Length: 568
Image 1: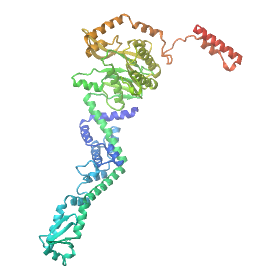
Image 2 (image 1 turned 45 degrees about the horizontal axis):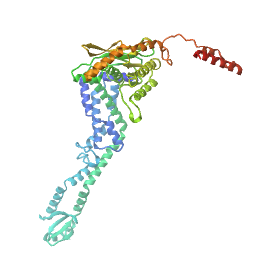
Image 3 (image 1 turned 45 degrees about the vertical axis):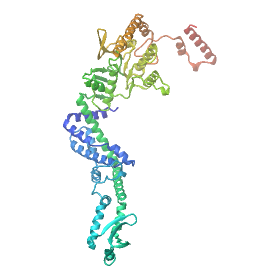
């Protein structure tokens, strides 16, 4: 709701929109940047894995590239600030992560194998023993055979002795004599062979036995060191993640604005609301897939000159003509403008909307004992109790869930309350055509309708919003389009014709003259005061100057005047 902040974001989108080439390469770099904030939160909570560290590494590398591409030229403040943050990316941390992490990473750190070969000497040795133990044993065997000149010397293994050196009996006696007995330690004599061990072989056996566990322990220690470095730089990493997000949103908004012909809205500290050629961003896309075009419409809810409140548009028209689409597209345009996006319109000028209230659709909450109509009334109550002059309100078919005159009465009173108490900018769609007469009494209420054309008994929806009021809703034509049986459609036409003959609208048309404006509201203009004898008597009484007897007599006079007023 800060016009300055919104303008700053719009400046960033405009900058991205102006330089297509730079925007393209920045988006490529952004696509290579994982979610730093998510990875950081997992690491700081002790739930991170090797891929989280890699995400931070890749994010830092992307941040450095983007900062270099943007440079230090004359950029919008939002872009310059984001680039400045990206330039602070800790290069030491990025290099440490790049040097330590392997190319192919497991999901969990307990699986191991995530530290790059050559990064840690002890880890490389442990891996070598774990993965290449046979080759290591064969190499040691060749060394011992050359040293003793016994070609038949073998290194074997069993579950009792572990690894041992085995030679035949004739060679065994030579190994038990100096100087070879200093290296080869006798373990076991058999009928045809003698078995020895060496200090090196015993150490190698111990290393091989614990190589896997030791390799994993070393990798986990490396992970802890890297995680500690990440946590130490957490504040900087969060700022970098935010800066990347700002640029990402600006670039994506620019792509959308260019592709869909969106305009830059003017967002200001006023009550303005003027949309020229507004479109619904989602419905427009759906129609395009069906090779149809969206019909754009204007909307002007801002106050008149020197006005202190916006207008209410009472939108009437047939079912399926586009009333709900019109309501929602203007609410979406307001939201898009205030998040700093370009909007689907030819031009837009919007005074800051502090809150947006929406009462559309039909839903129930049966588990809590709320019918469809009750849900509708609860949502309407929230709007009428909370909306203010800076709010934007869209109301679609208030009162449709109950009897006709009940619903009409509620909608009538709701419009008066919006006009006199809430004083909000509002769009109010209804099928109660009787409400259009209120525009004669409510200064800021405007009647608009969705245009249609009848052709040979069918209705053609033009989807255009124009000043005026609809005289009917064409519900039977819509029912026919929906596929109701022909007999039902014809019977409905006959019933409608009979009801129209009774001129049901006449009592309501005269009611507009009989009912005063909303009594609890501020009047739109000066009105004649109706003489009230009771009120006049109360104005003349001074309670502090009355004796008890005079006060009692005054009370009797007031009661008598009240009875006379009521005709008792």
